Image 1 (cartoon, rainbow, N blue to C red):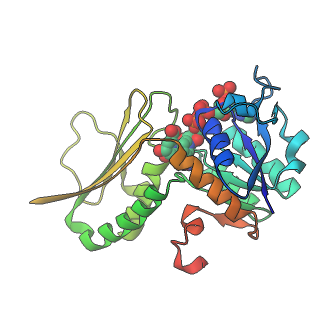
Image 2 (cartoon, rainbow, N blue to C red; image 1 turned 90 degrees about the horizontal axis):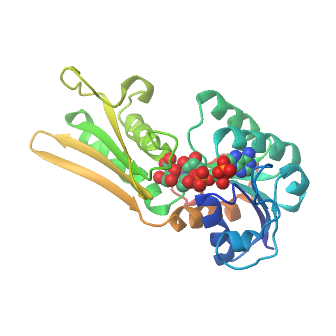
Length: 272
Ligand SMILES: NC(=O)C1=CN([C@@H]2O[C@H](COP(=O)(O)OP(=O)(O)OC[C@H]3O[C@@H](n4cnc5c(N)ncnc54)[C@H](OP(=O)(O)O)[C@@H]3O)[C@@H](O)[C@H]2O)C=CC1
Ligand SMILES: O=C(O)C1=N[C@H](C(=O)O)C[C@H](O)C1
């Protein structure tokens, strides 16, 4: 059985990549493509928009009109749009893959609540490499403990609207958790002026926005006399697109609940 997929934000950088990723994957069909209701692209062919040639799927401006044609909605848009889609998907029993970043704690709670009714796979980063890095970071933090200063540096393209990146925050969460620290208490989001000396337990974040950088992340563990850096560099959005489509296929047969890419890749021992 082919999993029927809807993609919203289809004219965006990730939306177009996702159309390409669905076309390249086995066991999935593009059932619907969505954009803002007021977009000039409503009615355009989604395949042409993605540079693949016509695929016969016209861009729609209303999820309510096409929702019953899909098993899973993939959403890489903006938080407000994603939340409106979460509510409709929960009503219609449609699973969701969520790649959007920049949610507030309150918005995240709304997603958690919806996951009581539908299967949701939400990840700040759908690439296999970044998810492997999460495991490496956990191991590094546990081994290095409180003997190192930890700093997280990320770089993205000039169009990115949220900072730090969702991935950087997830990486901070992984190392904080491994060290028994609360990220909300120890995170330092940038430094300026007379900051005073660094306190060991803090976790610093530095953000670069420039040009067309797809997504670079480095976590630096610095001790006296040696440094370890764990770095991931994405050079193509297909690394995220392929992962999101893999997650959609995996999600189609799951019970309601909140999952992430670690579940999809089998990296969580307790969910096998
Ligand atoms: N988890 C992961 O692996 C990854 C996550 N991301 C995240 O995905 C999100 C999107 O990134 P990116 O593709 O670069 O951003 P873009 O701005 O290129 O794309 C977002 C698209 O969503 C559209 N959109 C906005 N509101 C709506 C709406 N109500 N209904 C339908 N479409 C809507 C936008 O339209 P318009 O331009 O007209 O506003 C735009 O086409 C970001 O949060 C980013 O951080 C990105 C890459 C990987
Ligand atoms: O906006 C992007 O481009 C990306 N966003 C995600 C994030 O915020 O971590 C993932 C990836 O780094 C690209």
